[in-house]
Every structure is written in structure tokens, then in C-alpha cells.
Length: 292
Picture 1 (cartoon, rainbow, N blue to C red):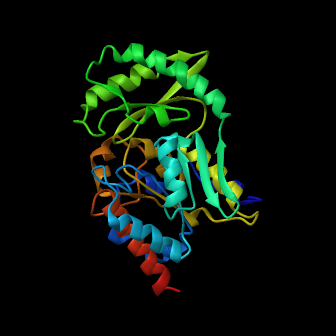
Picture 2: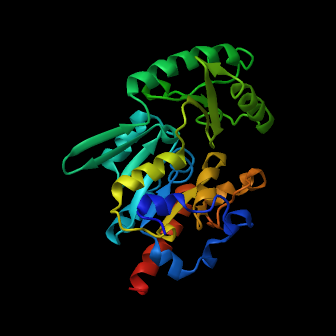
């Protein structure tokens, strides 16, 4: 038997049966399973937001979840500057940023940042990566770095859909393949695609790895059943989270990506982005209140 919470988390099967099935409508999610949720990990762009804005319903949903005892952790590819604002001002338990490069939390004792590598090391590697990617992007004159690149600690974000017309899928796949062939100072380059960016970095961190690490720090040594943790996302860079946890969710706009996902969410909302997140939150709150 696992001896502590982290062992319980890590012992989850890599491919659960639900993650390999076609997702069901959110309404099919059992209230008993929703009631068990204690930790809700969530993507941000186009999961909490929609079309570049944060719906009122999202903030209300985050507040309602907090009131019924659900700890929400944002797990995002967003830059450190954006994560700083989320961690300090939103009703969340913490933020994991730049696809796992760091975590941020605000509590009664102050503001805390933990990172996979020292920030100075990440910034150095990021500088080398920027130079290599500038050379590569000369072949794609219509594609540039994200406007928030200056506020990133670790990764380099290539803008494929934020405040611009979306780059076509074939070009994105070609870019991903070329980026993954790069090597910087003997390190393999990692890359993943979200709804708005191609995120590129050096290091072994990931959304899942840093989520496990943060949960290990937050939980007591008593084992927490994996069914008490869930995730909601919208894109290709959420696949490792869908693969890890036995019950997960996608907002409706993930539908376009389902054919490309080997591990899929268990359930999909009716609405897109933050409106879909609010759907899920309402069902969790209802389940906790009605089955109390």
C-alpha cells in the first residue's frame, strides 16, 4: 500500500480506462464522484478565460468552490508575470506556471515561489533558446514570440493564436517537429502546443510533475485517494493530466483536439472556456451541498 499522499498520486495507472474512452457529456458525471473532489487543477487560457477575457462566471465559480472546500490550483503555460497576478488576486490555492517551471502561492506568511531550477539558470537557458528560435522563425515571417515573453522565467512562447489570426494546424505541427530537433548546450528542447502558444523550454518539468510535487507538499502524510483530485483543460498540452487522473474534464472547445489526443477527458462541458468551467463548478458545489 502507498505510504503517503505522494505515493498514492504516483501510483495512479498511466492510462486509465476512462482516459481512453470517448468523453461523455458533463451531465453524465456521477454526483457521488463530484462530491469527492477536494483538489481541482485547471488550465487557464480558454479554460478559465474565453476569447481573451475572464468571464464574471469564472470568478464567481472560483469563489463558490473555495466556499465548499475545493482547493483550486491553476496549471498553465502562462508567463510568470500573469501567474503572479493570479496567485495574489484570484481565489485560488496556488498557480503552476510556464507548464511546470515554477509554482506560486500566497498565504498568511507571505508570497512563495518554488522553481524546478534556480531562476538564474532558467533565464540563462531561456536566452540561449531565444536565439535559436529567432533563427528558426526566420522561415516563418508571419509568426513571432508572444507579447508577454519579457515576463517569462523559463520558456519561450511562440504566438499561434493570441490576439491574432490562428496559425494553421499543419504549420504548427511542422514548427513543433523542428523545435523538438533542437539541442541547447547538450539539452534536448521540449515543446508543447496550447490553444494560443507553442511553449518551448529546457528541463524535465511538466504540468503533471510539478502538480504532483505541489500536492505532495500540501497534503498530510495520510493517503489521499486519487479520486479526490481532478483536472479540467482545453488543449493538447493538457494530455498528460488527462492521462494521469482517473476522472477529468474538458471544456467544450477541446472538441476540435479530441482526434489528436490519445488520453482524453472523461467528460466535456456544454459551453466553452470559462463558461464551461462554471458549469463544472456548479455541479461540484451542488453535489457537495445536496449530498452533505
